[in-house]
Amino acid sequence: MTPTSYDALMEVVRNRMTVRAFDPSVPIPREHYELILEAARHAPSGANAQPWHFIVVEDQSLKDRIMAYFREEQVARAKLKMKFPTPDYRGLATAPGFIVVASDFRWVRAFPVLNDGSELDRMYKENAERILLQSVAAATMSAHLAAAALGYNVWWVTAIGQEKAQAAMKPLLGIPEELSVLDIMCFGPPAKAPYKRWKKRLEEIVSWNRFDPAQAKTEAQIDEWIATQRQKVMYKDEKNVD
View 1 (cartoon, helix red, strand yellow):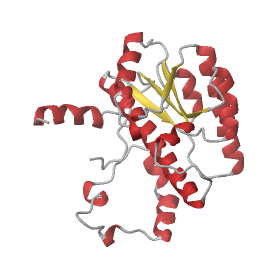
View 2 (cartoon, rainbow, N blue to C red):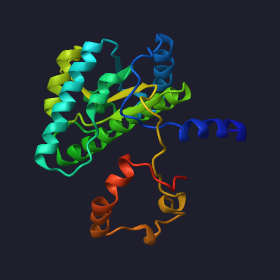
View 3 (cartoon, rainbow, N blue to C red):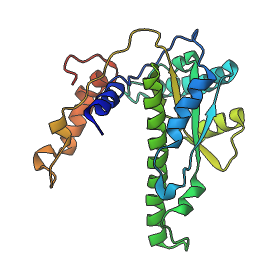
């Protein structure tokens, strides 16, 4: 890769910014959907199984109904006093670009598994599920970068692992029972100017040859960060952004 192409890539990477409210008045051309999904289909996957399927949602009534489920989840979290800074899911209905990402977990059979019901087989299948999820995440990230390259802001919606979420969305979109909805990609022009969120410095996340013990965190340190810093860095504009 030449420095010029790396610089072009990093321009896209740095400008891939998350927003949770969009300008719904700007339609997404079919060509842009195809360009974004063309990037997704070139992602790497375990055994080259490509275990992903993308459902483009253009129907506003479907977006509204999906948003309604997430809005109920938002209210439920508030009642549970989870102390988690849950986003305002009403922004889902404003997204002009809307792609539901699904996968069939039977594709784990393409990865190293024994299929004999043994404890070793169970461990291999757990790892196979990780391979599948990493594969789909790679495709989703490729799609996000393509959307950013086209000038859109994005939102990676992941709070859909619960059975209730699956039961709410599969019938709406005609998704077979064998498939699972893994995430939703929203994109479009932002409702207001986005901001770059805080990122850790490179030296905080990299070790050379062996793990740097100075980077290890105790459980108490992690809990302290969650209690004092999590909300600040999730949705607030930070001064020190590299």
